[in-house]
Structures are given as structure tokens and as C-alpha cells.
Length: 266
Image (tube, rainbow, N blue to C red; front, side, top):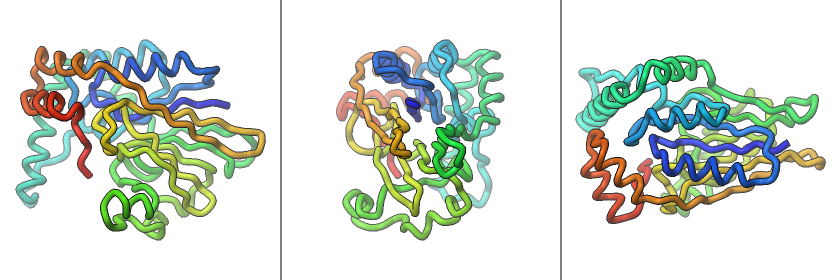
């Protein structure tokens, strides 16, 4: 059994096509799974949804997919930074809704029920592969890299192994694959492996390439995760931002032109 998994496209049509084309050239893949965050914050939301639908990819819901139809509330008690961020999210949600069609809206509505996908290579759930957007409980809590990796990235541990227990304690699976945090890597928690398959867009590791993974089941009763990094034309995305002019497009173009990417900040 071989399952290709990618996540967090965020409206990057060029990166999405590059990843799907790369997957098509791989040895036999049994299923292709998208782990959520399809089109918000990018210049071509309709085209990204259409690409996922046309290629018959199995899709899960991400937090930004849900936001398009239900933006985070802007409450009176919010601090100024959070309030401003939610105002900007609402502006992008409204812009995105104007750019997609009724079929895409229906797709997003149906997507909200697709929270997880499970693959069972044996009769025991302890062998299962579970794919989610962020974690098995909700669409927002982050699963950080291993404690050692956190020290290297952040200079401190932001999430200890013990803090994972509320999310994972009752789970039966061998491996959980997820995105949301755009930093590829593996972490172990008890008998469960945690595979962050990273993102197509907004990298968190400084590498501008689009990323995905192929997860394979072996007769030795274990899953193996192989990561891939795919180059694509950043200039095509710059041109799309300049043509479509989504909210904040000038800042985005300036950042991509200078650094080659828009980095995820966590």
C-alpha cells in the first residue's frame, strides 16, 4: 500500500500542479490524499479547487477551508493584534467567495464533513495510517516537531511529549500524517509515529519548494515515510497575484520577489 499525501496549498496553483504532476510520475500509488487548506490566501482559489476535483484527489478539510464559509469571529475582547489578523482573514474570505463559483462553495460545504481518512493494512487498528489536517482532535492545535528539533528551530521546547497526551492518548494507529505546521519531519509518541508532511505553500523550514510525502506499508508491519521537494515557477505565482490583486497582494509580491517565498510564522 502506497499513499501520497500533501497539504496546505493555500491557492498556489503552480505549486499544486507541480506536486500532482510529480506524484503521477511515481511508481504505483494507491491513493492521493490532500490534507486540507486548499485555496485561502492565494490568487487562484477557483482554479485550485477545480484542479483537486478534476484529478479526483481525496480531500480533507483544513482550518482555512472552514474559514471561507465561517470566518473567525471578531469579538470585542480580542487584543489588537488578533483583531487585526481576523479582519484581514475576513477580507480574504470575502474576496475568495467572490472568485469561486456555486459548485466550489458546495465542495467546501461537503468538505467540512471530511475530517480524517484512515488506511488499514491489517486487521489491527494499531497498524493503521490516520491522515488529518492538524491533529486528530481539531483543525487548529499544532503538533510541533520532536523536542530536539524544537530546540534547534526555536531555542526552546514549545510542546513537550507530555503535552501531546490530550490529543493522542486514546488513539489507535501506527502513524498519523498531517500538515498545518509547514515543517516536514517525524516525531514519535509512544508507539505512534507522527509525520508532518509539510506544505505546498508558505514553507516553515526556509525551503521554497513544494513538499509532499509517500507513505508505504511494508511486510515488516511498519509504515515508511518518504519526503519529496518539488520546484515550481515562483514567477507564475507572482504574475497571478499581480493580475488577480487579492487583499495585500503588493506586500506578497514584494516578499516573494525578495525572498523567493512567504514563510509561515508560528
